[in-house]
Amino acid sequence: MEMNEELLFTFLREGYYPDLEKAPGIFDTFDCISVQAAHYIELKCRATHYETLLIEEMKYRKLITQSAERDLIPFYINSTPLGIYSFDLMDLAEPIWYVQHLPATTEFEKIGKVSKLVGYLPIEEAVQL
Image (cartoon, rainbow, N blue to C red; front, side):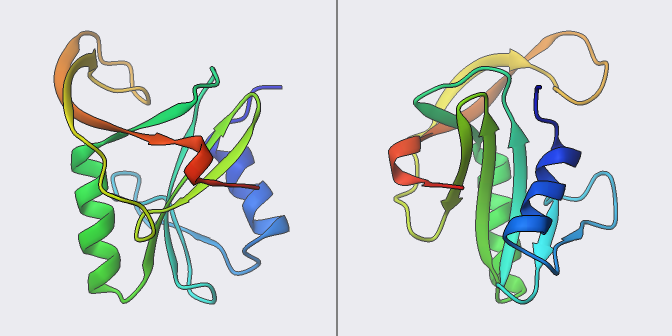
């Protein structure tokens, strides 16, 4: 079964963050928050497993700055067919950024590609959940 963000959220709430709450709006720059753990979390589900997981530079910047404004720790949690990987962004070096031509969005039905600034997080630097 392929993981989606709803299943990933439920998995995290049942096993790791009993107080996990979803972001209030669909266009928020984070997906969920745990006040108990002080984690500000972005979720991503990948249909293919990669040894490095992509993060958009814009998303990275917003996670870092907005979590700091709330005195929380930014986390980027990815699922792949081989596992669930949790990155504490404050514990990692900032990725090297590259321009890539990628789909405009993965969530909505927009067609076309745009140039995006992206970096890669090696899964060996994550905690596997």
